[in-house]
Length: 246
Image 1 (spheres, one colour):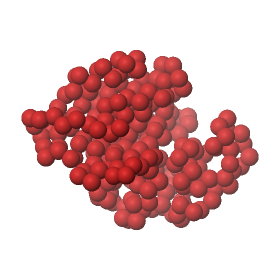
Image 2 (cartoon, helix red, strand yellow):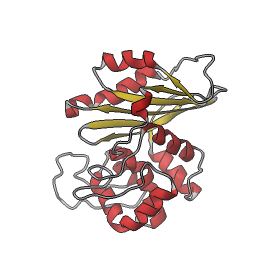
Image 3 (cartoon, rainbow, N blue to C red):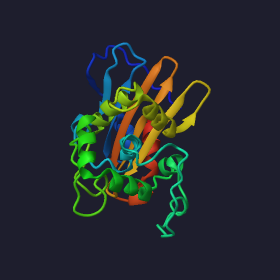
């Protein structure tokens, strides 16, 4: 896996990869992917469906990446060892119906932990954080539910890549140790000479997989979103398409 081919003559900027349609067609999915391969000298951004790649969608649980930084900075959580006690409410998923720490909350996408963070941080501070890191439309508003799922907050695939690159380089306006901790929490898989750091997201109608693969010669960043008309039956396609392309 993760053997993205080298394409010569790609100029710095964006290179459309219309041939990647075959991967979306194979899984009967409609969506976009942006890949930034920093192993290549030109560092061109490879894009399938450039128009959609600039369209903003709810970040859903991919927002747990910046949200964890906000929570650490605001003191809503001390470290990865702090325990959040389950309140006994059955949320329909075994991974959510138990005590949590940051690592399990990230791995299980435990929404109730992040709802605690949101309540403690508050909307005004959240808005300041979002503007500070230039995250999508930076608008944490909702009339019902969580602002990063059902609310107005939205980000494009290209903007996800820009954010992830800053995090990778510890260039976000947060303590370096907090950025390093979040990156550690994002580890999904590792091989002899590579590490995959990523986060899924699902809003109901569409889903994300964003992150990067670290290689000795550089990192490969990716941000995919697809429509999910079949809801949970479509969720496996997020990772499957990315892995087929990379």
